[in-house]
Length: 185
Image (cartoon, rainbow, N blue to C red; front, side):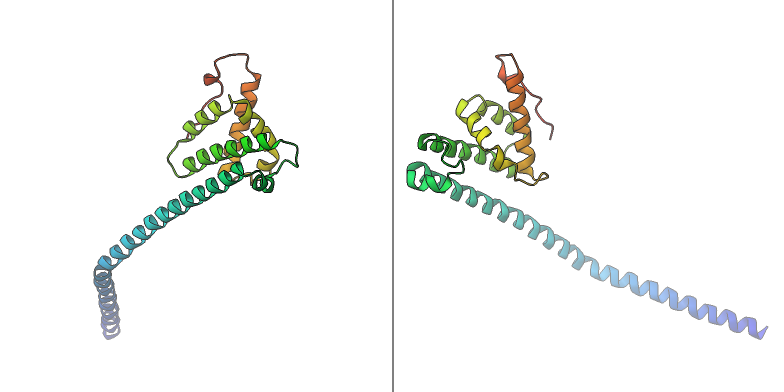
C-alpha cells in the first residue's frame, strides 16, 4: 500500500508540474499575443509599402523607356543604335516601329501595374492590329519575343497577340472587333 501511495504522489507531482507548465505557456502566449499582432501588422505594412515602391519604380522605368525611345525617334543617329532589323527597314519605318513599341510597352506596363485587365489588353491589341504599321512591327519583332521566358507574363501576352493576329488574318469578316475570344482573368 505504501508503494501505491508513493506512486500516486509521484503521479500527482508530475500532473501538477504538467498543469503548471501548461498554465505558464498559456500566460506566456497571452502576454505575447499583442506583440505578435503588432509584428503581423508591421509586416503587412511593409509588404504594402514594398508593393507601392515596386509600382513607383515600374512607372519611373516606363518613363525612362519613353524618353529613350523619344530621343531615338527624333534623332536618326540615335535610332541606329536601336536598329534590331539589321538595316532592313528605312529610318522612317524604324521610327514608326519605335513608336509602335512605345505604344505596346505602355499597354504592357499599364497591365502589369493593374490598371488594365487582361480583357482590356486584348481589346487594345485587337484595335492596334488593325494598323498595318503595327502589324508589320509585330511581325518584325517576333524573333525578339521568341527570346522571352515562356512562363513570363510578357511572353504569355505576346503569344495571346500572336494568336489574335492569326485569327484576324484568317477571318473573312469586316467586323474585326468580334474576332478572337477575350481571355478570362
